[in-house]
Structures are given as C-alpha cells and as structure tokens.
Length: 370
Image (cartoon, rainbow, N blue to C red; front, side, top):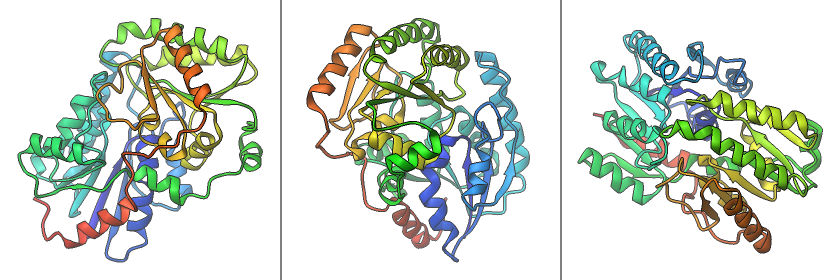
C-alpha cells in the first residue's frame, strides 16, 4: 500500500511519529512524507531537520510561504499552499494520503485534492474548538476525507453526523499518547545536560497561542498573562514553548521574548521535539496556556492543566483540566487550587492502547478507500 503523509508543523509531526515509525517498519507499506507549512522555516525551528534526524526520507518539501501574521498574510499563504499542492496532487501515485488536525495549512493542502478525488485519511477529526478558526478547517477536512481516525467515541459520532456515513469512522484514541508511553523520556539530569534547564526547580510549562476569532483581544490577553507570570516567577521558573504561525502570533512572541530577556529563569523554546516536550511535562509542576497538548496529553503524565480563554472552547477534556478566562485573579485562583491538590490521579479520556497499530490493521483490512 502506497501511503502519503502530509505534515505541516512540529505539532502534527510529533503526533504522527508512532504511526510513521510503524508504517516505515512494515513491508506492506511504502511511505512518502510531504513536509510544508513551517517545517522549512528557520523562524519556527526548521523542524524538517527533526524528521530527517528521526530516520525518515522527505519526498517533497515546500518552503514556508507565510510572510507575516496578518489576516491577509494567512489568506495568501493558504492560496500559495493550495497552488503548490495542485501541482503535487497531479503527481499522486499513492493509495491513500494522511492529513492530521485542523491547521489552515493542512486545509489548504487537502482542499486542493478535491478535483483529483484522492482518498484522504483524517486523524483527530470531530473535535470542537469554538475559539479558533481551526474549527472551520477541521470540519472541512473531515468532509473532504474518506477515512476517519478519531480520538474518542464522541468525536466519531460528530464525524458521522457531518459525513452522514459511519462505515469508515474508527475511534483509535490519540496517537500522541502512544509517544508518551513508548518514548524513553529524559531523566532530570539528561534534560539539564541537553537544555540547561533544571527541572528539580518548581516549573511551569506554558504554551499560549493567539486566539484567532477575536484577534483584537490578543494584546489585552498577552498583557494580562505577562502580569500573571510576573507574579508566578517569584515561585517558579517558566518554560515557554513559542506559539504556532497563527494570526497575530508575532506580537505574542515578542511579548514573551521581552519577558524572557528581563528574567533569567524564563526559558523560550521554539521546538523541543516530542521527547524533550514530554520530558518537561513529566517533571513540571503544572501546565498553563491554551494548547491542545495541555488538553490531550497532560492527563497521561498526571499533571494538572490550566486552560486559558476560549481557543480550546468546546474540546472535551479530562478532569485534570481547569478552564478559566484570561483574567489575572481567576488564573491565580486556579494556580492556588492546583498547588493545593498536587498530582492528578485520574485517567485520560483520549487514551487507547497502540493507536498506530490499530490504524495499520484497519488499513490492511480495507479493500478500497472511497
């Protein structure tokens, strides 16, 4: 079976990783990886290098077409990506192409496949994030796709509702959680040796992406967050993974960079990679921000997640996630609550054993993908 895999950022590549590894090691499959989006951007960590370092060949790579972070820049980048993939899909020689998630780059790539009637397998469909334009892209990719691998039965039901067809909808759980259970994470000493961050110290792991539906509020949000961090830094060191290439991401980045230059125990990270990121999460005190990772993965590492604002509004979460608005008093109250409890002892609603194995077994049993 000839499989193409579309990856547009560090985030989706990290989730794909166990599936890529399993496909690569199985002689039943041949694999072609298409890297685009921010993978070839120095500003966003040139993460195509990580793909190659992990032992994968990249069949085709497109340079990042994103010039800035305005609405027009995003729209123009989508148009360029669609044009690039119009040429690429004309060369398609596979049986199936994988798309993951909800990024605008992924939508732009997938929508170009429609005239070619290429079978698309969508991972992480059916989820809802009412506070981001990603919600539109995710459901659109679902409607274009032929096969669906979801992370929860609730999401499977939503995909069936959208597509009016449940024959090729499979709840396999979240691929990223397979990473957590299979990767040999760094010890505290190994992590310090690699990143020069001492996780023996109380640590907050933070990721904050701009909200993309109410972009005019991001300046207020980041100002409020920085004021909170100025208070928390008295008791914690803060590890900040920088935001995705979304609308208004540059102002958020600049605020974090300015905050980092004023405080020696703030660490700004462009891309940890899965092993580094999950190692940091394992040893941190708690997770703070508005990333899907906080919602999906932190529960498996027994960490509480304080989810800020509306970006993830509507997404199902385990009992470890505390939702609060971007208000300094509300955030500080949530921190106190987490400090009083300590470790999360519940379960993760996204977990299933070996989702990559489930996907591969399902593909081998399917005689067509239309």
